[in-house]
Image (cartoon, rainbow, N blue to C red; front, side):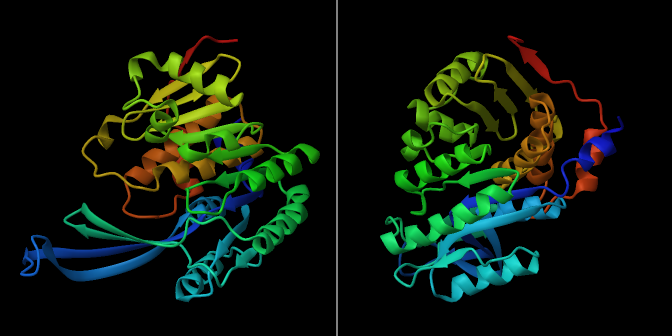
Length: 333
């Protein structure tokens, strides 16, 4: 079967995306001098943009690849929430399952960028657990949507949305309706995710979960063994600009190195969430794990080469997918 026909299977999937919705602001400028008030740079602002981050980027990735994300999150009753809703609607993503909570601000992160260098970040939001009334609204939305979707994605960015009780509720609903869950985990919540199908994480998150300063790439099989045994789930680890690796919980390891032409790029904070959105579509389409990993790698490379949350297209994926790409397998079942 031609690759274009294979990739057609990624389209028209319905994906439930649950978790922290974030507005990412980028403030671009140049340093004129040090401030007279403190030994800090004085930045002349030249441009500002706002984009969807957190599960917003996962959802827009899915939508840009001709599938249908349903998004559940919490936002405040503020200007940032209006921006989030407007940007979702501009992408054709319904915001009807967002829960508005006047007691908390919408999560926003403002990054100051000078000559491609990220020099400061300002965070707005609340990491407090949602109140019972809000949790019950979220549960009703989840209960109504789970039967209709092909796969579930949970994006836990540690911004206060996900509680242990809520994660257990999601897992129970998935089990009842025979749906797979893919999680972008937060290291502080590692005990929440028992019973999910797959966890997709960065190398930094994996390091924190394993309580090590840095992962040993030379001994990846040991890393995979520890994580798959702990979660009893499949695990995908993205080492941006280096390697992407899939660990089957039954012992199979598939890995692939990134292209060398990525080495001199400044990187992109959306690499992991874009790869997760594409991974979810691969799982929904019942791709084998080698093809899922290849999709995640392609999405990462395409995103890494861009600035900000720029959507990738099916045409871009198809071009890369057609290229000869050897994946290294170990411990085949």
